Length: 205
Image (cartoon, rainbow, N blue to C red; front, top):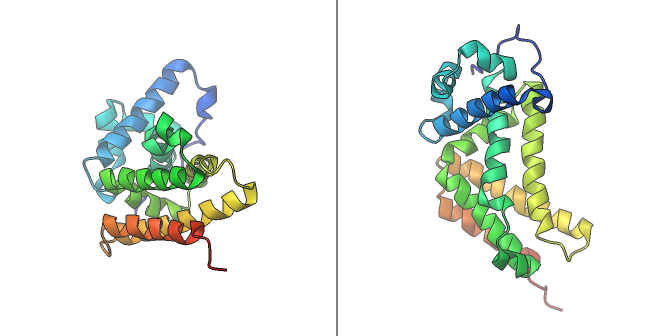
């Protein structure tokens, strides 16, 4: 599968070290990538499409991103920072651990329902050979895990980590099946909530 990789491109600079104008240009490119994946299939998007959407030269994109996978890993990081999983409303903040994680898992499923090609990007990025893409993809996963773990603030940290790992595994597995057309988004939600039923139900004595 083509990845739009440009092997001769230099390693991109750390975004935090860029001058403000370049940070804004990089963000415009990422925003363009997010906008395009909202309208098109991931596999159909080319780097030149992103350049056109962002209003920059194709070479400008490769100053900041070594490949399409690197760009979309950055897009995932930005997207997850903005979708509702990472925002705690007052109602969710005052609920029990179980109610909070159920609500957040539902938000995550709905976010992918609204942006189905983001799950396609996740599937591609899981197998990426671009080290820059892998680094950002790991950051994307860490952001999700941190948001869910924070919802279980009254539990022992090891127990909370185990619950998040289990629930996330069920969600990702079922979302992957949904992205491949093997189940509905409602099936995804039911599977995740059923896993939480099993986790939080006290076994009979």
